[in-house]
Structures are given as structure tokens and as C-alpha cells.
Length: 345
Image (cartoon, rainbow, N blue to C red):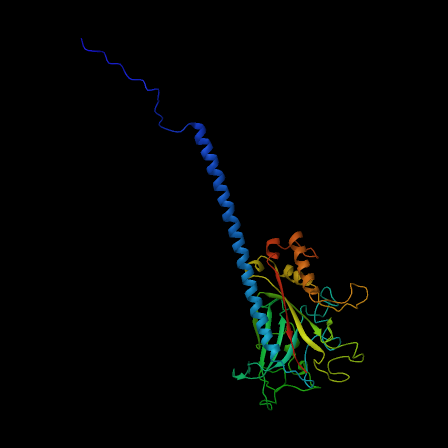
């Protein structure tokens, strides 16, 4: 007889797959990993977007402030020429701006304006040829119908050193050319567009499309920060830079400029009326009396108020007058300042 064969039992069973519990655990872990990665990507994208906006505004601010530095650095610093700068009487309104520290008043322009003579290249409007001397002016365009509304413009009007080639033309004529004017003749008498916030003029060019607020003040040689370009303690009778005696910028150590900048993408989310109210919430510079009322102004006070106004809009979603502003757009606003040392007289 043949021997009977019996299977050998090893005690092992073959397994060809995962159990249901293992699959569920794996799916849960994978889901958590995907959520974690997606959050990382989302945060990285947001940070990158914010970083790009800041780079954009930083670049714009640097270009504008560098341009102002060149113009002020070559400013004609004399006591016999006119300066259209912030001062108590001759300048329209208080700083051509918001009216004694807060809010735009009737007949005032909004942001500050400034005009002065500088030894920088300009162009004659009639020929387009260059001149080594210019009437330089900066303004925020306040014409709501203009494509440059609430954007920084610069005038670089070429002037003649000697004589007037077309003296038969009135000063407002676009073909009018002139040398610099000496006191008592004023910039506003010869070139009204240089002191207007709304008058269209071909001598203006857009230099800061992202700059919507422009303000300046003075650091005097006595150390005070003020909106009057002379030492009021030492010159108690002085009313303007030219009266009762012409002093030019003798007492001014530096001109401080503050600007507010927003990137184009964020600006496109804000309506023009709301944008105007954002600028309006940023106080004009006004000199405190030094006793009570918060004490004398210090370096940085204005910029702190502007940042506070922006943060309030970000947190509430509207301006102080109730105009709605997307918080994400308002959070893109950045404030910059720079001091320009005159080193004069």
C-alpha cells in the first residue's frame, strides 16, 4: 500500500490586504497632512502677497523721497527770493490743508503744497529744451475729475537765467518764460499753477501715483518742531519770510516730509469718496503751544497719528465719517517720512 500523505500545518495564514480600520486611520492621517500643507501654502501665499505690496510701496516711497532730496538739496537758499512754503499768513489756509490740525475746511486744498527755485534741470514749455534752473513744486492733485486725483505731482518748470524771451506774454500764458523772481515779486504772481491744487498745467508730471497724502513741517536750529519756518521766540514781529525783514530759511535746519502710500491693487478696492476721507482722517501738522494741549510737538508725532488713523479704519472697516473701506485694502497703507537737511546760511 502507498503511504497516505497528510498536509503539514504551519500555523500561519496568508494576508493579501489591509483591514478596514487600517484604511480609515491612513485616510485620516493623509487628510490631516493635506490640511496642514494647504494651510502652509495659504499662509505663504498671503505673506508673499503682503510682502509684494510692501515692496511696491517701499519702492514708490524711496523714488519720491529721493526726488525731493535732489530738489531740496539744490534749492536756491537766499533771502531775496520767494518761497511758497507753509507759514502763518501768506500761505493759503493752514498748510493749504486740513485746517488747524484736523479736517478739510472750505477753500483749502487738502494736502500741503510747496514751491521753490532749484538748480535742477527743467524744460521750457514752448520749446521742450532743457534749462539748468527750475521752479519746482509738489502737490497732491485735488481735482476729482483728473486722472491724477489724489496722486502726487511735481512741477519742474525750466526758467531763464537772464532776461525774458517772450516778455509780451502774460504770466499765465503757457509760452511765458522768465528768470527767477526776486522779492517783492512772488511765485504766485508769476506762476499761479505752482500754488494751485487743482489747476491743470502741462508743467506738472505724475511722480507718485501711489502717494495720496503729503505733509511737511520744520525742524528749527533751536531744536523745535514747528509749522512756522522761523524762530518765533527770537523773531516776535516776523509775519512772513519776507516781512518785516526778509530772512529766507535762516532759522530752518531741516524740512521734514511725511507721505502716505498705497499699492495700486489695494487702491482699486477703495472708492474715490472713501479714499478722500482716509486722507482727511490723517491730521495736518499744527504746532502745539507747549503748555497743556499735549505739550510741544515732537519728532514722529504726526506719523504716529496717521498710523493710528489707518489702524482704526482697519479695525472698524470705515473712516471717522462712516465711509466704508475694505480692511484688507486699508491695511496696505504705509506711512513714510524723511528729514532733508538744508545746511544753509
